[in-house]
Length: 127
Image (cartoon, rainbow, N blue to C red):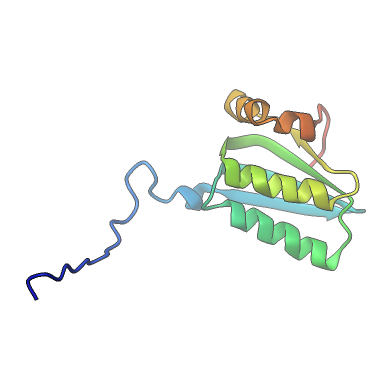
């Protein structure tokens, strides 16, 4: 047994910086006349993006979504996983996805990734 190596994989848990990151992410949803209104709070990243996709897919399964309007005023950050969900929604809606109230960090991420060219930004939107 001297030549055999054993690995023990253990969960180290979340670091202080990431502790409960997905606990602070919330989605407020409202559907009216083919438009899905979403208000996102917190970080839209690889831990939380599946929640947003699941809400979108569940709504889309029961109703025809022609447009998604997202209020981002309380969205702190968006990762590539979050961008991927926005792209899925953009492709699935006849009138696409529009964003409102982005902070400078989220706007910069959208600009650098080219998503600001894909998604519309709206000045007036009621959620």
